Length: 364
Image (cartoon, rainbow, N blue to C red; front, side):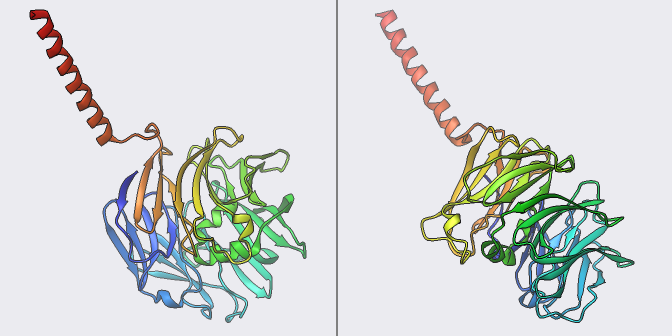
């Protein structure tokens, strides 16, 4: 792996893109880890109820300043201005986080807001603050969703209508049409609550469109499944039961995902025991070609190992407590330039020695 970012002053990473990482220090900070340029957003990170998120370019940031703030804010790092998105209530005691998500083009912002205990509404607003609309109501407390690349549809994995298990719905953000494509998805509230209060970057990881916008990958009972947008075809991809985050490659031919040893036994607290590992894997969407590419000891809440794909799909950017690293997926396993150079030098020395010996015997 190649180190591309030095150790951050904090491990509170809120979002991660191809060239930028958002983290919380004394304020919200967006760092371009290749140019080392950073932008600080003037608000107190200590009062933030959940971590902010970036749009795909890392130039727009959505955040809420405090639990009692009746607004979301969209900050533009290029202009330095912030747009107010009114949530439509005066500070519900049940509102823990709004889980905002930008549309792929950055022009719309979807978010949850609480109506009452375990009753949320999914809404969408123009990032310029000119309009907003409700898309789906009656959502239970724990819900996850992802924008389709077409900027029009949203897939949402939600407990709704009093059901004990989640279902996957497709929502038309323009017409508000709602279609249920999958029932009885088993999500684990306590462990995910623990993770995503800290790291909503994992929001994609439970229900995510592929880059073509034709299939959805989701996690049920710790395993990855894919399903077509009309719900007609479904496939189980993994069966380890320990998966808690996934991300499609930019080309759609691979899924990267995280597992944690013993995850099935740790749903109650969201912590891992000493000696357990978080592991990063690659797999084809049809379940073939599995390989584990990284493993690291983790414990406590510092266990998410935030990662994202490089834009060209040829590498993965991974952050741990020591900083950010680029994993080149096109290098052969175990490739080390310094080791290869050393081996080449040794081979050259041996060849030279053999040549000298042969010449000695020839002359003798």
